[in-house]
Structures are given as structure tokens and as C-alpha cells.
Image 1: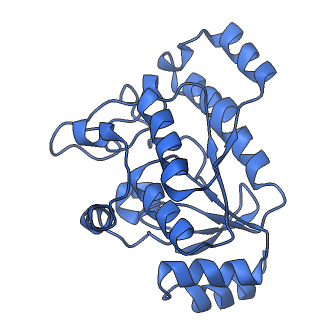
Image 2: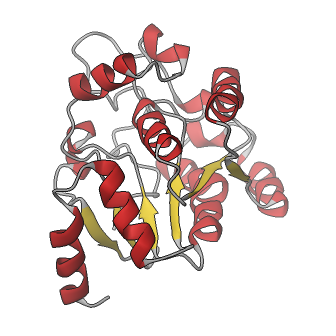
Amino acid sequence: MKKNLLKDLSIRVDNLPIAEGIAQLCELFPGKVVFSTSLGQEDQVITEIIAKNNLPVKIFTLDTGRLFYETYDLLSRTESKYKIKIKPYYPNTTSVEKLVIENGINGFYESTENRKSCCYVRKVEPLKRALAGNSIWITGLRAEQSENRSEMRKLEWDQGNQIMKFNPLLDWSMDDMLQYINDNKIPYNPLHDKGFISIGCAPCTRAIEPGEDPRAGRWWWESSKKECGLHIK
């Protein structure tokens, strides 16, 4: 990845309104801009912006096979409200079978290594397939979500996936996001109202207590950096 290209693109899009920044990238990389949504609140904001402005962005989601019912219901409601299709990517069947045979259906509770193996099979490998052949990957990451994300830039090079990653909500606060959702009547997962701030797979997500870190509800039984491998450089 040429640093000059990344720098030039950053100058062009970093300070634009989100819709204009995405439109600029779509113009520069026609047919090669994708957005990954986990149906979280941040991602719902970006989905609304893409749909409202009719931006030519391909939207996809990773269906791990172990999501909450509420997440699937939100997926259906989102497609219906915005008249869009969100393409699902599933884990490789053979890989899942091998994982479960070797580690057990809930083996991820036994060690961080097992958990990361599960995340790789159910999320990381499908993501690589979803990103293949594209140039820009849009995400809903916010800097205040975790220590790992505080050093990210709006437009950066993702070495692991060999793609440019655009994080348009990076400098948004939780209050900014909630205000936008309220003002625009954006559908969101009802689990958020029950203390589930960061929502992933059902067995690996719990509600958090007041004052806890927003990522505390993810893989709460371990003391890792609370990432699944999707956003590690």
C-alpha cells in the first residue's frame, strides 16, 4: 500500500460529511466499496446514511450461526425499512464441523485459544471472502469503544486484510450516535436497552453493569483485549 495514496485520500475524505466522504470513495473506486454491518447501533447509523443517500455500497453481514434472535429480527426489519438487501456470509460448514468435533460446541469458554479459533472460523475467514476483490472497507468503529480502537484513523490500511478501511464514525461519541438514532428513527436491537452495549454471538455476550467498560460484556470470562480478530492490524 502506497503511503502517499492513503495520505491523499485521507485529505480528501477525512473532513467531509459522512455521506459525501463515502460518495467520494465510491466515485474513486466504483463497485469496490463494501460495508460490513453487525447490526450494532453504529452500523445502523451507517446503513441509514448509505440507504438515504442511495450510495452504491455493497452491504454485507457475517452470520456466525450463533447470533441472538433479536439480531436476526433486526436484520429483517432493516432490509424492509430501507428497501435494501444485506448479503450474509456464513462460515465454511466443514470448518465448523471440525471445530466443534475438536473443541466441543461451547469449547470457546475453555481457553482464549479456543475462543479465537471459533472467531476465526465463524467470523474472520468469512470476512476475508467478503472483502476479496474490493478496495474500500467501511466500518462502524468508534475510537472510544476500546483501547485498541483509540489509535485508529478514519482512513487506514488494514494489513491483515490488504484493504483500505474507512471508519467514518471514529470520532463520534456514544451520545452523538444515540442522538442521531433518535432523530432519524433508526431501528436498533432491543438488547441495547437491556444493558447489551456491544452485541456479538449469543454465548459470548452479556449485559454490562453501570460504569463497566462497553466491551466488558464480550468474552467476559477472559482478560484478553476483547477483539475477535476482525480489526487487528
